[in-house]
Image 1 (tube, rainbow, N blue to C red):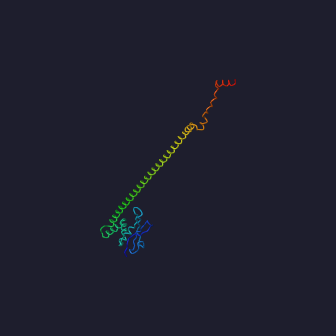
Image 2: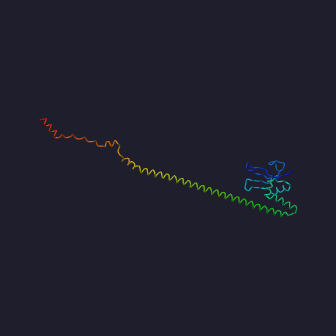
Image 3: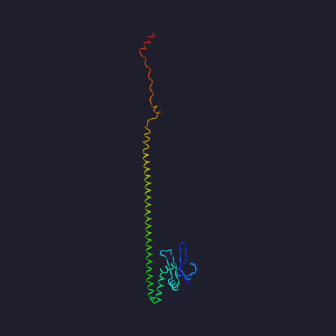
Length: 217
């Protein structure tokens, strides 16, 4: 029976979560499996991998063939290196202690690289958060300044309106006085215009008086 080490998909739509399994090469991808030897979560950064190293290496010893993705996972966790070192021990190229020491040194170096990557990602995330906070603070200050400017403009407009009203109120009596001193209407003028006095009757002259006396005589 040909055995493959491959991924079996689980998880939600858009958020896949995989099991690393050893399964018959003839079975379906998500069908029956012989053994679950780990998990792989690509939704985190870096990806989270949990692998049973001894089980994975044992299946490799038994001739199981990993898929490309499963091979990358096994290499990342040191399973392929352990498989190679165990082959060297069987051939007598090195002792078990030497193989274990090499594996431990590699795992330690790998863990340091992973921790460094996590630290850099954490720092980048903190810097991005600080940058976003600074941008938000600047936007808030700009919005506050704009609101204060708008409020000052409203106050200035109200003050100008009040000043105009005060000026109009102070000019109103002067305008009324000017209206009062204007020329009277035609009717008033007619009433105030003096009527020409009648000329007194002319006194009788002495000549007229003499003629009247002669007539009486």
